[in-house]
Length: 80
Image 1: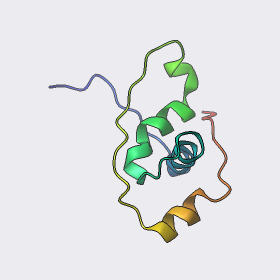
Image 2: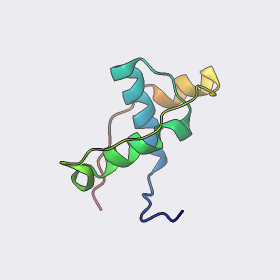
Image 3: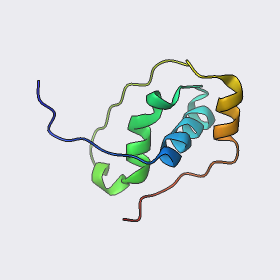
């Protein structure tokens, strides 16, 4: 199997994805589970008008770290 493309995301977008999943779906997820959501948050135009699927799994995250990361997070949008 060969990947046609890959998206790089910033750590702040991963945390924003975690917060979005908590706020909108009530899901507590580990950072790696929010990567797909982070990619969409950073580059909405790239995914606009398309059907997008991402795997969201696990809640293997330290509760204290999770709360530290997701407190007061806004949803970034890539500017470059």
